Amino acid sequence: MFIGDRMKTALETVSPQETVIEAQRLMQEKGVRHLPVVEDGRLVGIVSDRDMRDAMPSVLLDEMTSQQMHAKIGGVPVSEIMTRDPETISAAHTLQDALLVMHHKKVGAFPVVDEEGRLVGIISTRDILKAFINVLNIEEPGTLLCVVVEEKPGQLKRVVDIIAGENISLGSILVARYWDDEHRALFPYLLTGNVVRVKQKLIETGFTLIEPLEVLLASVAKQG
Image: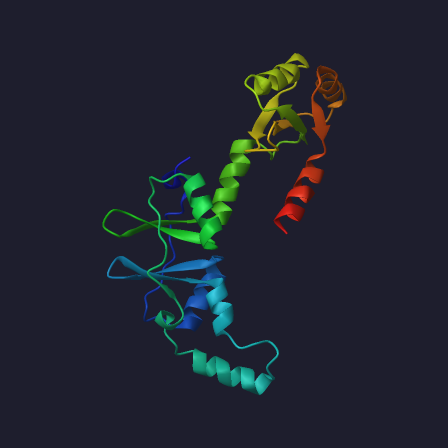
C-alpha cells in the first residue's frame, strides 16, 4: 500500500504570518489535527493540535488572566509555534514505511512532498489505521485466534488448510515476527463466531491456542 493512494490531498494549510488564533479556528472548523504551513507553494513548517494546546493559556488560570493571555496570543503568528523543516515523506513510500517512522519519531502525521519539495498531501496515523482496518477486513464480524506454531516451513499452510477444511472464510492472517527461538504466533481472523470445531481441530493437530488478549497483555508487560 502506497502513501499516494491513502494520503489526503484536499488540504487545509496556513501561512507563517497567520495568527495562532486563526489557525486554531481553522483546525476546529475543519476537524483536523495538523496544519501544514506553506509559503510560496513550499512547505516551511507544520503546526499540530499539541502545539496549539501548549501555546494556549492553562485552564487553571483565573478568568481575567486567561482573557489577557488570549489577547496577547491572538496576534502571535503561526511561525512562532510551528515545527520548522518538519519530517516529510514521499507519495511513493509505503504505509509501512510511514508507520515505522511515525513510531520512531513520535509524530502523528507527515506532510507528503514531491521531488521539488512542494506539498502534495498529508498522511496521519488515522489514515494508516483506516487502511489497515480495510486490509485486515476486521470491520466484518468474526473471531481472532492465536495459534502458536513451530518455527519451520509449512506451518502457516497447515493452519490455513484446517480452517478451509471447516468451510470457514479467512478475513486475514498475521504472523508474529517472533515468539521464541523455536516458535511463531499466527493470528487468523475468521469470519464467523462459531469456532468451536476449528479450535478443536487445531488442538488435535498439535497446535497450541492462546487467547489473543493474553498475548497483548504479555507484550505490554514486556515493554514496560
